[in-house]
Length: 398
Ligand SMILES: [Zn+2]
Image 1 (cartoon, rainbow, N blue to C red):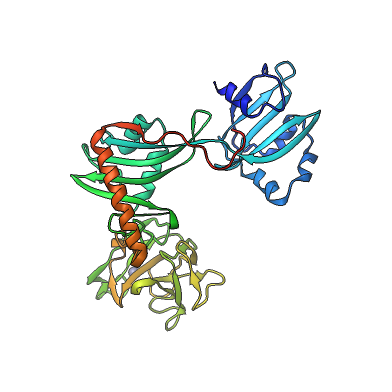
Image 2: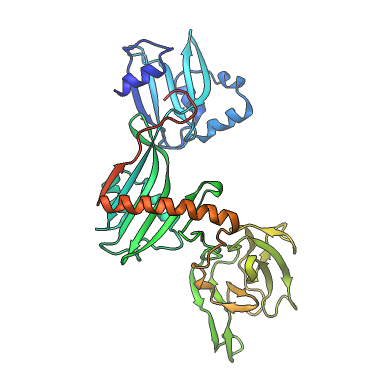
């Protein structure tokens, strides 16, 4: 069937008798070597535009691709090698000359419903039911900061999802897009609905599932001191002092990143660099949040007061400037000027939708929710196809 399909679609090169093989792109194989290995001169690349040329570097290891070779000589007649979910390299022999083109990947999209009741772990159960690992990966990233899949889910908890899956030559292809889902923990359902406009997930009330903050600002060895607003004995001063942040022991020079988008309010030393916080960065975030990173050995280049930073951007490096016993990051978070526990931020969510956007979303979410609830009540530990296969808009081969 596969061979038949292949020839229907790309019959312009050769006869029906030659075999088509499915292969997996080797780790570290570069396209030049692939050409050389097939006796093809790299000069065929000279006609490509810059973008296409650049995309030849984008072939991912273990991508499956197709080769069509002459049965007797083994000579490559045609290869189809994907460079993304939607585009592929078509390398073919045309009257004794090799040619190369970028063409669309042909696939079908099916919509499916999954209903699972936890037996072992989400990952294991979903693999067993769906036959691939993509759905559990996708769900754990959607619920990432809200649900710890290993710790929070128990036996008899449920997961339901409606998702789109691409099928290319009989196999799951590319990303799985979850349209709606719930995780039912101890009978309570946590919903997630996909919103096309911003490619984000929201719950049934229009709150985003994404967290405003990253969990940690640094790769650390251990947490040496927690948030203790009522006081601890200060390691250097020897007196009772509240500890209004968290200390992360880390190697000197380790990158420190901003836990959220924001603006740099301060970069420098408040008094002298050997006192107090030492080298310090203060970042202002939305909704009155502020984060502080102290005892740094230095600042990231181009970090200036007033400048913008993105979540995850490096702002400085771990050190022991100011009053510090060893190299560590002192990390503080304030909301409206009040200190708060930096380790309790995972549930602080970004702003949800409002106004007309919220109205529109709520209508859509209501529809998706009743659809999902309905389908969830029908099946257990099953995958059901909801819609028949549909072709993507673009044409092309395979
Ligand atoms: Zn500290």
